Image (cartoon, rainbow, N blue to C red; front, side, top):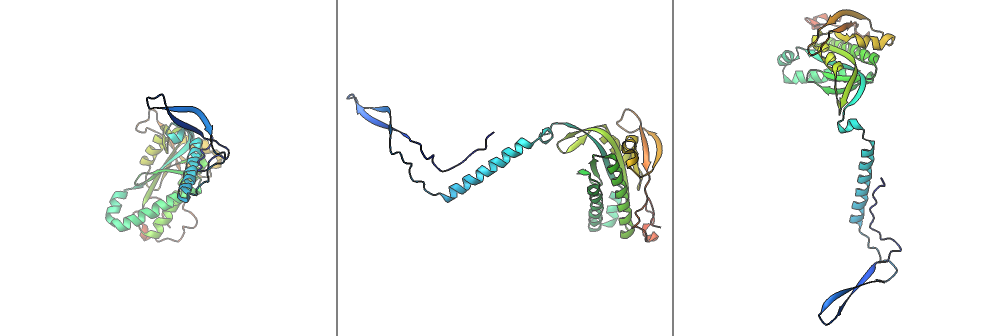
Length: 271
């Protein structure tokens, strides 16, 4: 498609036909002489119109940008389902509602912002994509299973570090699964999404549960050990899912902590 051209300038060599009107026949009827008469061959002088010209230029630029964007749109941008093979990660805060009630609005908002900042940093560092916020958690997808596993561990390590410094420990649970999903717009659907969400809900605070397919896909690219938990029946799925717990340790930087600040905390301690 050719870009639209808007110009206030007349073509240099265009002649306009001139219709002459003659009265004849005694009845006073106007007859239009169909003969085109060439008038002055030189174009009329162009009058500068700064406002009109600026508007025309702006419109042309906007139209060209819009047309270029339309050409670049794919099926997913229009909402049509697109199959993708990804690893899906869900997180959730354990008993967050009751904790927020105890803390009060201001302290709860501050803790929540810090928590989601920690999650977002881990997702970005592992080349993941945050799909959406779920109130008490997030959903993210990764092109590589090993990257999703690394992100899950980084999340737990970051939350552990925040717990030890804030004195307001929270429990993070993470669930992962992978395989073919359907992307519709900015959201994802399919069995791997359901599996990851169900595993997240099943996990205790401080734990990472992953479907076996994630461990098998990552293979040796993941340096984190697993603890087999057997097959688990998950609501909404026809067949049981073989589940592994991903074993993690606190990050080396999180070493000097106050155990009293973590009384009742779930997951690795700060000893």
